[in-house]
Image 1: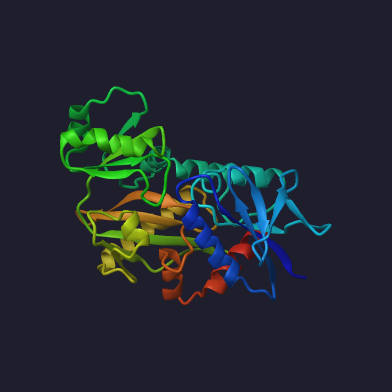
Image 2: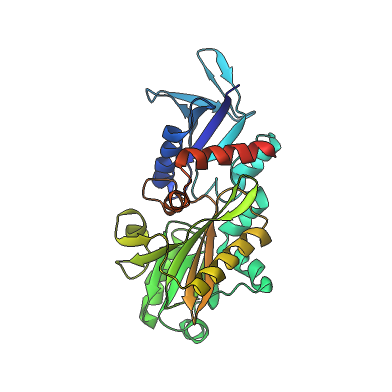
Length: 325
């Protein structure tokens, strides 16, 4: 019997347009012989099912069901394609867990932890995961630029602590640039992380639960045409994404081991994509994305293809894995 799959997309953050694209790719790709996919748009002002003709029907939040022409539909599972809040930070995971509806992403605690860059780094450091030097600032704090420079040096990165797709991030070269960079970051979040600049090869490593096993996908090397891997580089073609990455065997083994360790230490499930930069031959962890992009331009689908995993198989596997739980 075919499973009813709600593909949730949209969200409350600056990433909602990317999420809609990811969700649409999942919707178009899922095997119709196994699944009945439903597009569910989730925004602050509405939760709606969108049919083939773009008609909208409200979602009943009491049990996450829909009713169309008097016929009620409940869902066997949820494919989570929301980047940012509320899909990547634990809110939807907690809601769906209360309703006992399985979903394809990590659990609530893992989502909240990994979405908070500062807390995630703090959790991984005791396990020997190397990271950049960092300095934390909250909205309303007195800003001591000299103390920041003494800790992380110049240039450095000023980042919104809880944001994705490179929203709220700036590269700072001079002390005078901190004010503007912090303004940009605080538009996305009231917490900021400032990190030292790591000058080296940047790679992205997909790690997924595939057929019951933690699987590290082929590694992608990021070569940005811009000053760093910003929004334009990620989504507007202003970068080269080379899969497999041009690494030595030793580098590849080190970063594969580190990425798998991050996945297992954090008790992840579902999809993940971790970012690393090599410094002095060692991979330094930047962050982990638990709802990575699934658009045609996205990195994780490229990596799956390099591993011989089609999108149909990739998405179907995620559903089958979550139905096991």
